[in-house]
Image 1 (cartoon, one colour):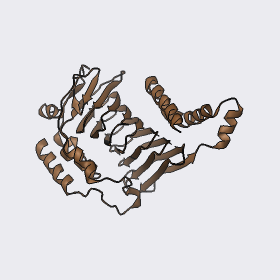
Image 2: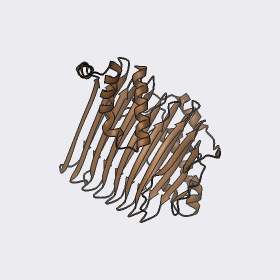
Image 3: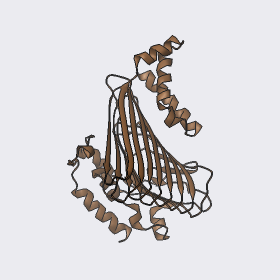
Image 4: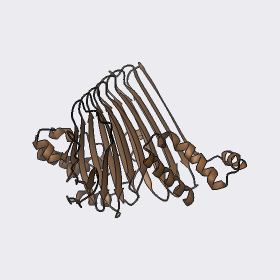
Length: 385
């Protein structure tokens, strides 16, 4: 099938799906309510083009604006990539997880292809700035060639009370590595849907650093598919809620082959009346022998009105594995605050020290400008408390 035929099939699937389906298992139950009116802006979004943007790689309302002058790294529209034979149309799609996923795949109206050739060894970070001031629904494909090493940093800055949807498939080739930094700054969105499906071939590795500043209703999905043997993936995530934001975050690691390794660690800090649901999935198939996979989620509530839930799920279909999970939802301990205040800190400084200590394993490995920005937001959360 060509791209147009595939999109039409996806659109028919999206139209036939219920707005909010019910699942048999409580582990995959929908915890974030979606209404028909929430979806209309995504169904009606249009390709808007660019606004003459600035640096490195920039997109505006989903359209690729500045072509990256990175030598043999390709940054072009999806249609151009298909016409040039750089990608197959089916590479752009994956299974439909739910109504929002189906709409993203069936109704997207823009997107880009980012391609790294085989044997690419990039020391410099590839920076992608996503800006937006209106509704948009886009889909992208990143391709990392075999025997390559790449670093990608994505930053979202969305304004204008928009509804946005962005789905991206990332294919990491054999014996390659990807360091992937994703900063969601979507405080002004009405509805935000972000989906990343990352497919790892044999002997490849992935490291994700994900920071989220959610909007009014934000839904983020990470699907890590360990397709080849001897694959290693790590996800380190953190989220901050300051007022009445809601984040629904799912990190799903699918082990399909032997000798895979995975480490998923998430930290959530919730102030004001914000809420968060974190679902961590680990699936280990029958043929995925000698796999090691771990999951940890910790939520810190700063107010009585904040709500946090952490739901770990392990599905294991063979006995030759090592897997475990842990989760906690807690408040700042009065004993901790009293101890720090007895050492000369005032109440605000003591809270800041506890929160920074809580989030530091996620934030400090980041590039300095990003970690500094995130710690500044921590101060805002304390101020709203």
